[in-house]
Length: 84
Image (cartoon, rainbow, N blue to C red):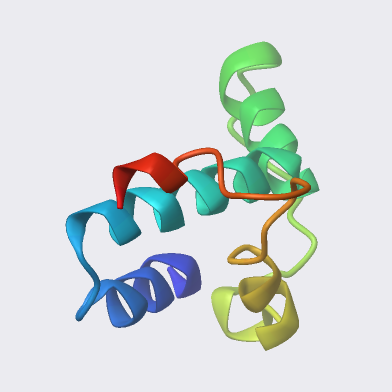
């Protein structure tokens, strides 16, 4: 929920190219985060629907974790830099 809220806040005044670039960054970071693999495990692999999250509720997710999802994880130019 925090990620979506921050994504909407940041995208509000961006161009479509900038939104796609932000989405790319966000999606890479989501896949790298342990919460993603835990959700996949609980829903698709074990099918027990009981994920063991790092934080028991959304209010306890640190701001730094949310911010880190918007940081680039590659060297050099953005892979979608040509969109702009």
